[in-house]
Length: 478
Image 1 (tube, rainbow, N blue to C red):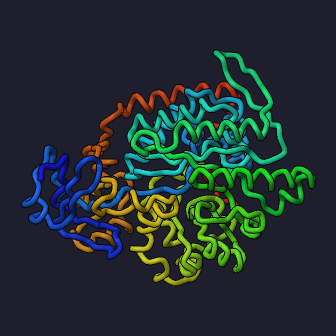
Image 2: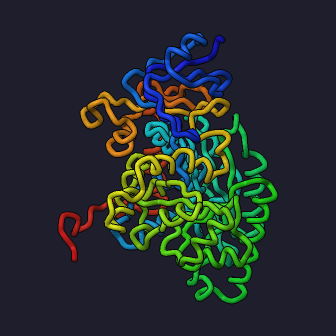
Image 3: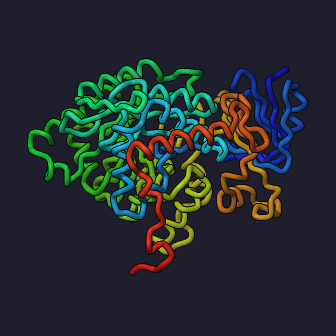
């Protein structure tokens, strides 16, 4: 059989139901799908290809899946991070009042390029901070993000939705050097999100998918909001959740904490399409509720929330819950490198239990491959190397000092590799990273565009002071 592409000679880590690892393997790809997988001699004897990739000395994995990250953060990163809540304040100001569509497109291209270079073929991106700073006042901001991702060639699950009650909120748009402010209601944001879903969900061969979002309701919100506003927030959450169920979309929330899962269950917003991020310091009954309702969890072991409290990811998985791995990138001290987050996840839980056998290496890899796909409802399309699935795969060059000698490849990839070891990325059968370089785009042009948009953003918010190194930068504080 003549096929589009054969990747041959690698060690294949399939992440299929049997977790097969095939030495000197090969994968045949036709029409964007995997049509055969097995030993190199078997595949080469049965197929010829228009393009052959010799991956000898590499490990080939399913494309990595990042189940929680933020659009916009890539152009803010470390700004103001040493000034208490200033970093979050910058996000709020930029995302509501200082970010034209060109900002969102430049950031999307930069973030997608970062993911591409790190072997992340599918990633969730919340269009803003995920709490009170979603850029859903008008649909052109989400469109700019989607177009930027598509330029690079990765997949994005773009989460959009209203901000938390009370409303209205003040947003602004830029026309040249002039800023025009306007009030934005819940109804406007919800309608915008519906328009985005109608326009973009499953577009461009499924590379763009849309998820719905409403901010988490925790104890402090019931305490600090007026009774009317809190009741509004409950009703709005249910409206957005019900719409997501009706449309077959993921419903995600950023920042679940002790007690908030109970609130979600009482409000009728837990279910198989729910993806709950962070989930720190849960009560025992909340762990059970997640497992019983088939809700999914985005565990972000490198995030600040995982310093404030612990996500009981291992206990959740023992109860049968699906837990995917997220980067919470890029903000303010972490990248989209999922190899880093796999290593962090293992150390995070092993330190908690003081047991080096907790969270095995293979299960950690599953969290950002097949379990990440399950968390997004995409396990029939991506997450493992199997016949019939989309040809989303990456190769890791093992011919490096920190990965040699050539044995125990799965151990070496998870424990020692980093994103810069990724050599090739194929998405939907398209070769989008070749020998460590992006195929579709000019990397330096993307970086230059991001620099220009960042400088404009800094000028708009008067943020030059937020770039300064603090006085205690080189000291130890108690």
